[in-house]
Image 1 (tube, rainbow, N blue to C red):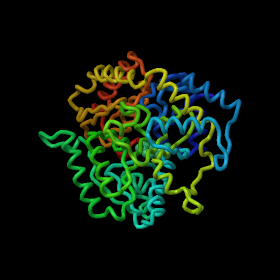
Image 2 (cartoon, rainbow, N blue to C red):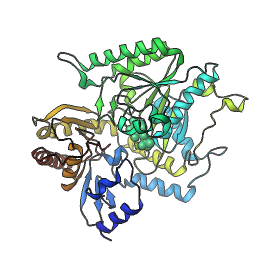
Image 3 (cartoon, rainbow, N blue to C red):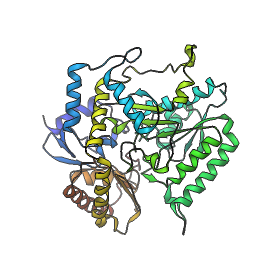
Length: 448
Ligand SMILES: *Cc1c(COP(=O)(O)O)cnc(C)c1O
């Protein structure tokens, strides 16, 4: 069957995520038949370089043989067993290894990033309640934050496009300024901006600390804000404030964990440890849905009691799914055996160098880079820039989805030098086309 046939059937039967479906009257859905490495192939044989690791999940590209093999072997033994009252090898080994990597002793599982956010928020609140402090029931999030789309997670998400429609359903929280380094004034460093945001946070915690359970942040990079990056000193100071005002620090590393930020976990660059760590996306290398919340043993102990209701009575049917855990173990094996962090450091320096033809363009503002993430803003009056650039890149065989006027690259770690050059050349070419063109009008909905 051809692309056309699949896209028509999809349009008729599938409600696609994060999409005004009517847009697909003009913008065709892309049916993918197969994928290998960084390449996606459609039903007409056209290839696309997956420059965003399929929404940031396929760390090592598509169909990585080692992850595939691990899932296959697990399939022959045990595909799933409920985790309430039962356990199995992959979930035990994964929990042990994540504890060792993070310094957080207990792992609780969900299936998607948003479920990890929900778990962390509920656990934090419940911890304080178990300690006899139920008034600590509010959460602080940052401006332009993104923590998922379920009702609890959306309440700590500051992307009005996603949240304002549902405002009546969301429990109001507290919002603190973002340390986004793009706010630097003349002569100001990223650290200056971060310290300014720390002072605002301190005022907020000093005033409301008694009613706050936790502060939730995306360490170093606010992904959905258009890859807003900030100085690690923010996290160092935030940890100090959280300790001082007895508030939990939740690190949402759903996007930046597993080496994306340059270190295995982004918070490690600030020399701190959070109270809760949310992981998902790259955890299985894009093979299966899995999320995880790790927490300190002392927090775990506050739930450990003869009273059932002091326990964390939260569950998802697929909690700790064996196939997903086997994929995650294979991801950790790859990190260990292939020295991925070190290899990425060299690769990142190389890609930054090769990106010159693109970032030297006069329309480019705020070029930024952290680990295996690159981003810049484009000065343009085109309100439809994101959609136009996405389309122009797609035509050239590249999958890039700008957020507003921020273009970002979040490629699989397996990207080769010739693919980098090709991606950059396409990027320059597409920019020429889009900036020369006229706005097609319509809304400026970002493509997260
Ligand atoms: C993607 C993302 C989430 C939500 O994860 P889903 O799997 O899409 O529910 C939460 N937080 C951050 C930082 C994310 O990037």
